[in-house]
Image: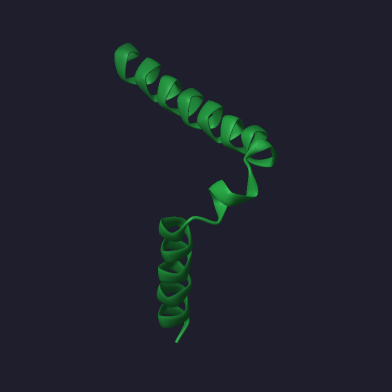
Length: 55
């Protein structure tokens, strides 16, 4: 019981810490690093999937 609670809290903490690091680090990334082909392809695929889902 206690171990499960600690694991859940640790997972939440790690997830929020990772999200915070991404949000803080994003403005410091060079524009070319964001505009790479795999990232663009991933965003394009996500956009198409969302469009398909919305009908």
